[in-house]
Amino acid sequence: MSQKKFGLNTICTHIGEVKDEQFKGAVSPMYLSSSYEFLDVDVKRYPRYFNTPNQEHLAKKIAALEHTEMAMIFGSGMAAISTMFLAFLKQGDHLVVQNTLYGGTLNFIKEEFPKYGIDYTFTDGYKVEDFEAAIQSNTTLIHIETPSNPLLTITDIEAIAKLGKSKGIFTSIDNTFASPVNQNPMDMGIDMVMHSATKYFGGHSDILAGAVASSEVHMKRIWNVGKNLGGSLSDMTVWMLERSMKTLGLRVKAQTKNAMKLAKWLEQHPKISRVYYPGLKSHPEHELAKSQMHGFGAMLSFELQNDIDALGFQKKLKLIKSSMSLAGVESTMLSPHLTSHALLSQKERDSVGISNQLIRFSVGIEDVKDLKRDINFAIDKVSY
Ligand SMILES: *Cc1c(COP(=O)(O)O)cnc(C)c1O
Image (tube, rainbow, N blue to C red; front, side):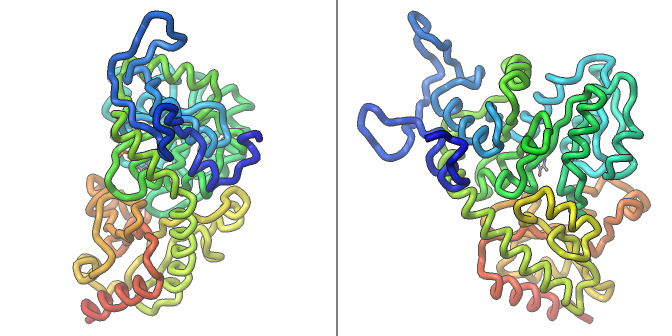
């Protein structure tokens, strides 16, 4: 039976298992060797070469989920993205990158690219025209993030892929927020997909990891740089990640369903002035999101009315935790103006629509009625 015929949850459960030939156990054995035989072997294995049994097999699961040929697992999302960037950008090259971007990626570009003589332009917006306008004669890569953080803007993936192809420019996407459960950018012509596996892949807020998936040709190029940068993941964590990913489909679908219900409820809430969620008809790119996503994801943002103390609100929550990260099975919230966007000035934040009343909500798997009650309780406590 071809792997292509398998459904999402079968891929999550079974693809990339390491068979336990010796004892016939039900789960993958964990191979912790950092030293392997070199005589008479087909593959020279070493953890930094991304080719231990656990690494190699789990990569197959990620490739299958992203509908592509190969994948590599990294020690963090940033190890994944930095290796991918440096495989496709050299001195004198130019990167076009979305203005609303994960903070770590933004810092990497601003702090490290000048040292390598790599040029870059942040777009003015998230529309295809904004990317096209930023292209130069030396542009070799376009990088997008959709849905974006924290306002959940949607960029037209297929149009970006077409734009890249028409100009001979590679395209990459940070698919962390959607996860392959809700979005498969390779099917829309994007060249490379990266993930912070710390988020939905891990899903339990206890793993730091990253991944890139692409064609064999592109992955070879990324491998060549990756073995030099040394950002591979320890096999113990690879094993934990495999275990986590068996429930990726179940978790993300449950979280996505909860997010849709909560977004609709929050939109009607008298103490909430605005909700940002691509699944809502009020979202400006709702139709685009519908056409390119299988589900609208489990991240949303909302603005509390001005008479509510946004920090006090988060302190009064009993179930929902305030947390810097996202995508765990537990619901979490944060204030972007104090975390991801703290380094911007008030004026800069205003210009990108990040007010002090804005809360980013990573929806978990809890029962919706309990989450609603938690939110209402906290709002009542801090309303004037
Ligand atoms: C967390 C995150 C990253 C960085 O991943 P790490 O695992 O923290 O290195 C990159 N992109 C997005 C969208 C993220 O949320």
